[in-house]
Length: 617
Image 1 (cartoon, rainbow, N blue to C red):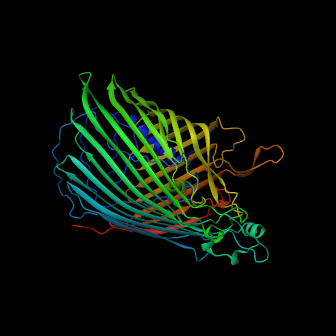
Image 2 (cartoon, one colour):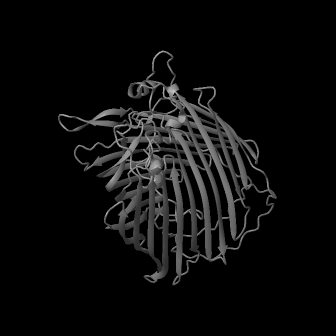
Image 3 (cartoon, one colour):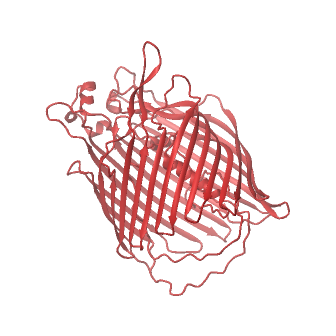
């Protein structure tokens, strides 16, 4: 199945790092985790004292349409989780830093204004405010506020006749507020908490003036923005606890509890609970090795609620009157898994062996069960220059309302939900030609039940609202990335991914799935004063719409989105430790491409801004 190339690359890099001899697993103390890969650390230990950072350096992130071109078929929760190391090291006394700075920078304010040059009134603000506590041995806390509004006018209106090239004005706004903290008790137990709220506002803008007139005999002046606007809200609380003990013959634990209340316009809401916990025990193996046994349990529960609309005006613009209004919906869904596994070393091989037993009560009349593989082996060759990992892993993917809107925000209210089942047989190869040249090659053969795709909802006359559909199929993904790194000055990555779908049911067309994607990325740091980032991406053509032939009964493609190439560029000038200026250009080629059927992207956007930090003693 075809997925967003950036997500695929992120997964590849995480797994590639797991195969390296001195791999490190990052820790997220504030966000619940569901990633279940383990890392065995082998090799000499080299203590390093990190340098003191005097400035919170947050270059502007690329947030362009190019990086959003490929909507992921699934959402992945790949937050790295801490595991117990298979090696033990003695403590190192902290080194004394001579001439330590008296000013610390534990905050920043980033502010910018953008313009797409399609309309003089389309000014897009960006505000990003971050604060965290200064260095403490046993606790930390902080908060972040983020808001970005993107107003774009697509095409130009014709004063005489409805224009097929004018899609009106879209306003997309994203607001996030996040509070986080952690506390270490007796250097043995870590407790963390995260309270986050995010809101996404947008419009079902995927219809032109001519479509509006021909389908509904309306003009754009006769409708209001509220007739086809949507809004999503999510309030989430995540609590975590874990032991920091890695001694042999002692138990450890790791537990994360997530509570989420998600609701949207048009009277639908979802409450979810996610509990992910494990206990682990380290023990000696083969006299000179150490193994860790885990018992992991995971439970996901969802409660869906959707009220029946009182009239057609309570649904997005264009709902067909001849189709009955949806009924009220009340449903419960549950997924449960128990996963024992063990990590150990033998003759230079790193083994991960386990099984996962899952119970699926997700929108089914009866609970079904599945047995998932959880196996992998990794080995380094040629003095750690070559690393190879192969494995076979399966899992449930809960396509709940919140994850569906993250894949495609233009879905109909309260879309159909089903559980996807994925079993992935993979081989990942990493070759270090030198310290500067790295090649990653990934082969993933996935077997899916109820893989999620999107098609235009026939209940909406404007052909601008999507509905999910689910297909049993298999997918072979071939990906390669070649990276050049020159110290901290320049990083260049050239990569691509080729997708092959097979065992697709007869008369089923997989929509919005490209056959090939490629990217070329450059990060340049010039004397710690100038930071440049170049992002390019090529996406092959995609089938976007089909209809059933009334004579043959076969489906045939009626709309194909053409291939496109996009470029994003950003630059930052660091004036001082506390002040920097940045500029970002999205869609530098000014190309009118389509992310989804009937949804054109903005041709050009310029954002100018600054980042300022307040020094703290």
